[in-house]
Structure formats: C-alpha cells, structure tokens
Amino acid sequence: MPTYEYECQSCHQRVEAVQRFSDPPLTTCPHCGGDLRKVFSAVGIVFKGSGFYKTDSRSTSVSATPPGATAPASPAPSAPAPSSPAPSSPSPAAASSSSD
Image (cartoon, rainbow, N blue to C red):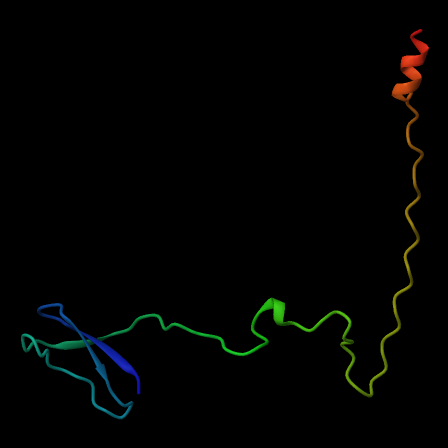
C-alpha cells in the first residue's frame, strides 16, 4: 500500500498516511482540525536486475545478427594513409662529434 503525505493549510504540519488506492483522501488535520492537502514529491526509483547499466551490455564478441539471418558483408578495409618522411635532423651524438 502506498504512503501518502498531507500538509495542513492552517498549521503546516505534515502527516503521513498508509492508504489503499480506493481509500478516500484525508481532509481534516489531526493537530488543529484544518484542511489537509496531498503533497506530491519525486519518487525514488531503484533498478534491480541486469541490463540497466552500461556495463551490463553484452560483450563485443557476441554477434548482433539474429539466429537464422545472414551476416551483412563487412566493409572494405580502408587504404592506409600515406606516411610522410620524417624531417631529417642531426642526432645529438653527431652534433657533439662534429664540434671537435
């Protein structure tokens, strides 16, 4: 059964009540006799079980192709990028030997 929270419009006291969905809402404050109004607030959500987190996804070795279906053709490998020659610079050993 859900727990409802009510607030008195006169004394601002808050009251919690465990009620069925079919029960009528509370209307009278038990402290001062003023009008009660339901207080709506955010509900906490707890995800239990597997499949809710990024780390729960299946491994990359598992194929995404359903059983009985043919796998799509793999894309053609791209050509390697042409490598540019590295600029030649004197090595530190060659520079120290030339200063003799």
